[in-house]
Length: 260
Image (cartoon, rainbow, N blue to C red):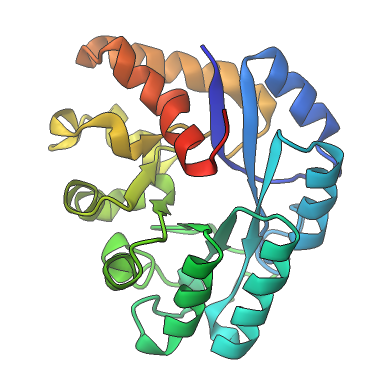
């Protein structure tokens, strides 16, 4: 079965993602959505410039997701979105754990630019690991839940929002509610919060249609086999049909990224 990994980062020991692309391709992964990160949180991972270089090396396989920080103000963020969208990026990655509230109306010009450029938005949701460089950095989970993106999703319906890590373990029900109510709301099922929800069979997941869920590893290509084994086993236990598995692994992401 073909797969698209909707949640990948660039590791600096593989700066152009040559190894990742080769090994993922051998395992049936035909496309990677690669999310840039702020270097003060995750210094071994690539920023927007690194992701652009990998995109240019592997066109049609590596798709870029720019990192923006809404604390920097609407004007600067609009320029950032405009610049990287012009370079071919498909998505916006953000970390509301840094302390900004995505529901604040001051950010509306940024959402308007994201919508106008036809970009996706995949924010980190739930708990975030402590920075190895700045262990006392101010981080919070309070603004990193799906309901904080509801206002933008309603007001800017042209943006498809993908909640990373199933929206966070503590707030997964917010993900379920919004995926049921809003056509432009989705969730990736990446570790650990995104898989923990399913591993524990938390209430509500068995009733959800699979047209809003996407597969991702949030890891290197060595994680693909283990991830596929986990999901295949979980779907066997839940009696998930073949067409829903196809949506989860490939079709949903292919539609969002507009790939064949």
